Length: 225
Image 1 (cartoon, one colour):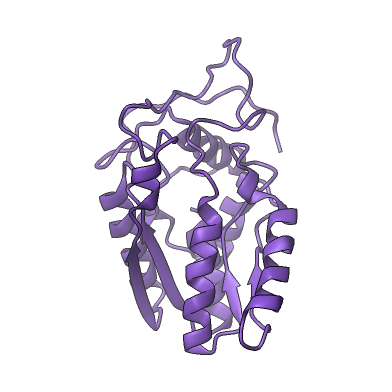
Image 2: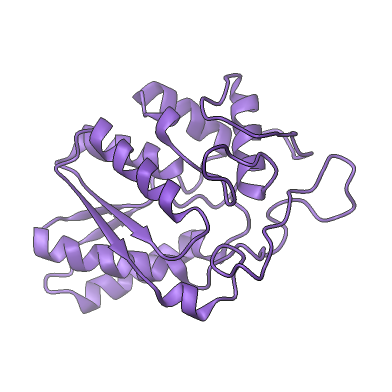
């Protein structure tokens, strides 16, 4: 959902090129289908799907290792800590650095000046590669390690709550019905993983229905934005 909103912003303001990564994640097929559909709906100049096998081989994440189960989000009366309080097992180690590196390489070839990424810090699942300092440090790497040093990483959603992102998506007419956030489901979202829980809460707080299908869901106990 966050990437689709960034895509809508990019398509509105620039000649936009879409980059998607299949990295051995559980919903790899479904995410690729969704990303391609979003790029087509927003009339991107080109859609480039890349396949990375290192995360599947390295493991260490519930998203890429079938032996590590994807946990359900904490229920209303659960004694487990709320979403975002610690780094979850769905964290893929240093994933966004690999994504950004490939994006910078393609930007140099295209002579593109901006890379837009849908990182969200405040309302995320506690991933360390969604922090502003992470992107500030990567920006310095681009300045010192690229041909002209002029490529800028843009994180327009990083300080927003998920409910605010839903409202922005509606303003932009972003194709939310084509997006996919679930860590487990392919045909229907599971409705109970952290990602589904955060998304469902965001739509509920925004006062609108989520247009994608769910197998089952419950809202988790989280502070209102």
